Image (cartoon, rainbow, N blue to C red):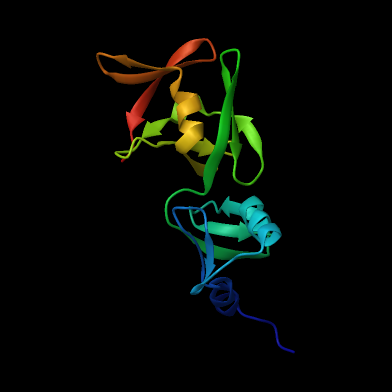
Length: 156
């Protein structure tokens, strides 16, 4: 068997995978319904250095994925003192990235996840938990957390 060219490998990486705004994965026109496969896909989400969204198995094995809105959605959020922890839909918890908070026109909050690599959407009950510490100022809105106030910018 011959060696694949880089062009052939790139073509194989376009597998027709899409993650919609609600967090449903689609392969071509069929939704991915198996819960463990969905969780694995969420955990494998990554972004290449050039900004392309991928499902990464390792450095050489990955496939492209179209991300409609955000990579992850917050399932819940809770405060421990003045620190907020978010549970993302990939079942990973991390402290909210206060410095990158943005608010969309539908009032959902966006921030980064996984150390700044992915985009996360905070809505529903998670939004209400975070919003407990949002204050209105003359310049807009800020979040009181981690010993300071964090400006919430408008999402572009």
